[in-house]
Image (cartoon, rainbow, N blue to C red; front, side):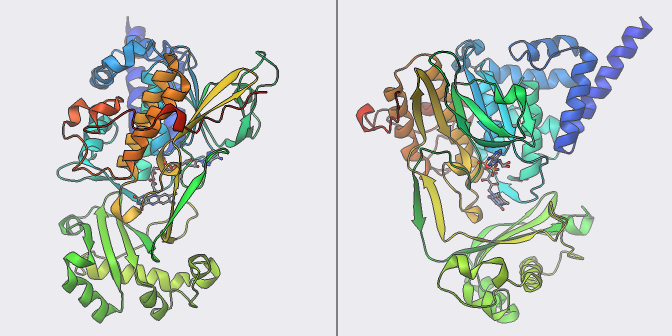
Length: 487
Ligand code: FAD
C-alpha cells in the first residue's frame, strides 16, 4: 500500500516537473522520465494519451485532461478515427509546426515532428489576437505557464509559446526529434514497396525509414519545399529593429506602460520629440513586457545613417543591411535610446538580455521585400504513391513583425491545413481538396481580428467557423496547381 502511494507520489512529482520545465531539453527529459515511471510508451501514439490519463490519477493532471478532452471531443475530429491511418511528417518546431501537430494528433494521425534546432531561444515577443488567446487557454496554456495572458496582456515570448505547445504535442503522442535537419523528400523507390520518406541529418534509422503520406512544412520564412513558387512583395524600404532587455520583474518595472503599436500617424508629437531630442526617426514602435522587455520598431534609413548604425548608404537593402555595413555598437546605442525615450526613462538599468549566441539580443531586419507562397499546398504522386504537401506559418506567408500577424495568421493556416488533411483521409479527390484549400488561402492575407468570426469559442478546424462568408469553391479544381508527377 505504502509502495503504491510512493509510486503515485513520485508520478505526481514527475508530472509537475514536466509541467514546470523551462527549456526544450528539460521538457523532453521530464517527459521521458514520466513515461518510464508510468510505463506508458509514447510511440504507441493511438493509445498513449488514454493510457497516460488512466495511470496518472492526479488532480492537477485532471484539470489539464479536462481541457484536452473538451477540445478532442469536437465533432470535427470524429473521435480521432478519421485520420487513424494517416501518417504525417511536420517540419519545424516553431509555434505553427507545433500547433499544426496538435490538430493532426487530435484527428488521430500518426505525427512525427522534427527541427534542426536543439533549443528554443527566441526572446522576441509575439502579439496574440483574441482568438489565439482563447485557443491557447482552451488547450491549457495557463496550466503550463501561469502568467499566460494575465490581465489584459495579449502577447507571449516565442520560446514560452513553443514550450507550451511542445508539452501539449508530447502529451498527445506526437514523436518529436530535435537537432535533426530535414534535407528533402525521398521519392518512393519501387512501385508499392516503399512510400515517401525524408532525407535527414544526422541520418537516423527510425526517422529516415518513416513513411508518410502528408508532409507539413512549418520551416519558417526561409524554408519552402521544392515545388512551391514564391511571390515577392516589394514595398518601400522598411528596416525593423528588435531589442530585448532583462526583466527583473521589479515593482518599478511593473509600473512602466506597454506600447501596443504606436504608428507615426497616430502620435506625431511623440515621434517628433524622439527625433528632435535623440536623433532617432521611427515609423512605429511596440513595447511588450514579458520574460524580457521587448521592443520592435521600424527605423528610417537617414537616422540610422546619421547615428552611425549603417555605415554607408546603398540603394540595395541587402547591401545596406549587410553585417559588414552595420555597426553593432551603434545599433545597441540606438535601440537603447529608443527604448529609454519611449518609456519615459522609467525602465531602470536597461541591460540587454542575451540571445542564443550569448550576445546582446538586438537585431536589425529587412522588411522591404516580403514573401508568400503562391499556393498553400500541392499533391505529388510517384510510383502510385501520393503525398500531400502543405505549408503553414511563416513559410506560407511571411509576417511583418511590427504588425504582429505571425501567430494569428499562422494558426489560421494550421487549422486550414488540418482541415485539408481530414478531407485527404476521407478520400476527397485531391483536385477538389486542393481547390478548397486555395479558396481559403486567398483570404488569409486580408484577415484581421475585425473581419474574422467573433464567435471564438466556435472556432474549429472547419474554415466556415472562422472566416465569415467563406466560399470554399471560389477556386475550381481545374485552376489548382496539381503537381501529380507520374512515372
Ligand atoms: P518559425 O517559428 O520560424 O519556426 C520554424 C522552425 O523550422 C524553426 O524552429 C527552424 O529551426 C525549423 N527549420 C527550418 N528549416 C529546417 C530544416 N531544414 N530542418 C529542420 N528544421 C528546420 N515575429 C514577430 O511578430 N515579432 C518578432 O519580433 C519576431 N522575431 C523573430 C525573430 C526571429 C529570429 C525569427 C526567425 C522569427 C521572428 N518572428 C517574429 C516571426 C515569428 O517567430 C513567427 O511568425 C512565428 O514563430 C511562427 O513561425 P513558424 O512556426 O511558421 O516558423
